[in-house]
Length: 394
Ligand SMILES: Nc1ncnc2c1ncn2[C@@H]1O[C@H](COP(=O)(O)OP(=O)(O)O)[C@@H](O)[C@H]1O
Ligand SMILES: [Mg+2]
Image (cartoon, rainbow, N blue to C red):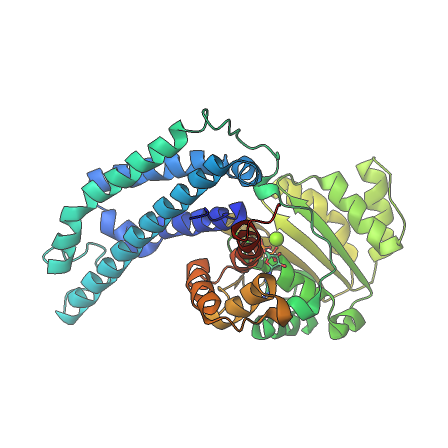
């Protein structure tokens, strides 16, 4: 059987889900007090981080090398096993908590009910199962030299491109409620007494934070409400000069090459004085208080009701910058994920008349766990797999 082509972006998303699960309250509660399991899960996390660095290179090489394709398929299988295991831990932990509450124990007690049968059953099987996953992952990591897989080849996490404010709205599924909630906050003036408020949109990579910010940014009501709008893709490095240049460039519709921060800040301040502005700082990875203070100095003279949207996967960044309540973005519904997957996987306007494709497609969509990036990239790779299976040259 021809080996499936696996989307590196999908595996990155699957890894992000695994990391989230490991850090989730029920899992943390479950392993509290169990040093062995905690240690093994820590090892698992380290191993997964090593694998993550190889994904970009493997994604590219799999098209020419079927052994790399096999390697990615094996990895996908192990990730699904790890995901099932963490899912089970979460379910058992929640069940223990419910049993504890039913029996009238103090629900605020952080220690779970260790006498629960389901707890013991899982606890017994846990160690060998994690060890098996670790062994399989070790083999996968060991194979990297034989397959000539290099770490961090594209030098950018998941090879992602910079973002802009433009969006193809017809290709966006769902998000109506989230969009309306954010627009309501943007259009409301004087909620906090601050002249300028900062609204963070938070969620893991690939969830659709940038897309949501784009939808809001391009809405006509928003465009009418603000005197100036500007979009800056920040990414890993919070470069105050670069961000200020971009904001100034958009406000003046001129390319800004001024490299002296003071000069550009003074010019920006002049432009913003008394004007209501909306800035988007997209994909902020890190920022310290000093950098944020420095960047925001020219903003202080803006008109009342000015707003800054920050998208980030980092809660700490959101807390540091935000003055309005964080918008925690939720996963897409399975229905919308299916539509998105179909748009990329099937011709004929995103539908398939072939029942077997629909069955397989829906199984894949379940694995996407509501991540639009995963649905999109798996849809694209589904097409590629069909081409490879048909024996046509790629
Ligand atoms: N609601 C949606 N409908 C269709 N595609 C979406 C949706 N949300 C996100 N996407 C697509 O998924 C990918 C990741 O979305 P993005 O907004 O960049 O995520 P994030 O900023 O959270 O990392 C992009 O290619 C985007 O076009
Ligand atoms: Mg983004």
